[in-house]
Amino acid sequence: MEPEILPPQPEAPYVEKDAASAPAPETVAPSLGERIFYWMNWTFNGSQGLRSGWSALIFVLLFSLFAYIVGITLFSLHLIGKQTEFTASSAFFEKLMNFLPLLGAAAIMALIERRRSLLEYNLTGPRCIPHFFSGLLAGFVALSALVGAMAWGGWLHFGPHALSGAAIFRFAGLWAVVFLMVGCVEEGLFRCYLLSTLTRGINFWWAFGTVGTLSVLVFIMPKSNGPNGVYAAALVGLLPCLWLHLKKAESAGFWQATWVTSFIFGSIHVSNPGESWIGIFAAAMIGAVFCVSVRVTGSAWWAIGFHASWDWAETYFYGTADSGMVARGHYLNTSPAGNPLWSGGTDGPEGSVLVLGVILLMLAALLAIYGRKKPAASFVVEAG
Image (cartoon, one colour):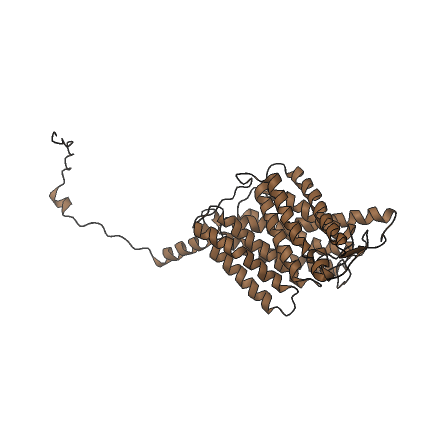
């Protein structure tokens, strides 16, 4: 074997003796002010600007403040009051009290986060209009399937029509406006702003801490209906989110945000009269399916349409209780019968155990129709 020939080595540069012996310049330690500035900047800002946790907190505070202002204004104008009846007019102004603050808070956050428009919060994507109308159809079909199954089993009885003539169309239109606003408000809060914002920055431990803290708050609430549904929703999401966290899956942030927003969505229903634990759990699970719809369709429009149509069919068309409340001005008359586990009791169809089967079928149909190998919606996770 021939000896290895080494390449020529570069000559060391000539250094004067005095320069070589000179001491190295001292490193200047950052001042206290510089350290505070760096810490504050790291605490509040990530790779995409304001960190998602602070964004969500500011949004909630703004929404609460604006809702208080709008509520006081509407109350002073006698447009809302201490009414116990669930009517189209009272429901409209109550939802307006949430719709206007939602727009205001989201608009301010869009400026802070340098968004081009409010549509960037999960409202852009392919085929938004067809997705909205397919959601409308799916919501009515799903609720009709649930009501049909309850009637077939003898757990729901139909009575004579409650409306006739022009009143049918008048109340149909009024309730359509109300529940379109309901869909926009609740999906705008949970599947648009919060899901979009939390996805880019939440991790398992923040999600676990949020769900755990809210579970404790529900537990100590003096009046809460169906709190066991809240705890069930918390447990359902725990192991999958922990597994994704340990696996360091790229999609972990989205599913952890899904867990948190769906849990909160179920929790806000515990103050409704007549709620049961199945109804609360079903609300959280429907919220999770709506999050899936955002991922596979690319926007929240399917969820908005489904939500509006489901509530319209439940409240107006079939005249059943909706989260424990029965409305005035509904088309059909229905009444629950038998075991509340199957009939839903005072909660309505959402309190029947049959709703869980409908939710699973709804999820399967959603994935079969819109599911893709790659999610339609792209979510960017902020770096620390």
